Image (cartoon, rainbow, N blue to C red; front, side, top):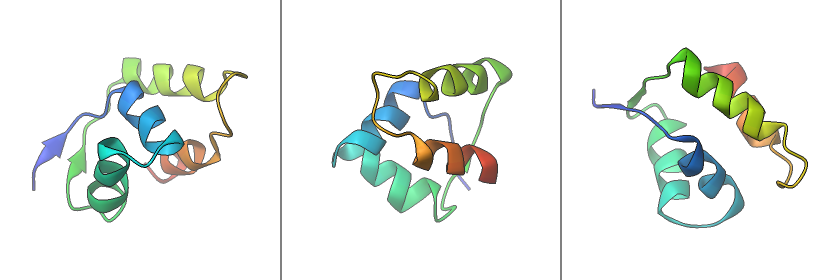
Length: 68
């Protein structure tokens, strides 16, 4: 199985637009067709970004992090 690292910008882009990052997230990551690798630093950044008030609701990101 291929391993990937999802930068925070990819996650945010996937959740707020219908673009290549959203295809990566919904067609590869969520159906577990790839293995995601996550460092403590990236996880901390995900959490910080998810809590920003100027972004749309990040419920999908929260759910993904819970599942991870």
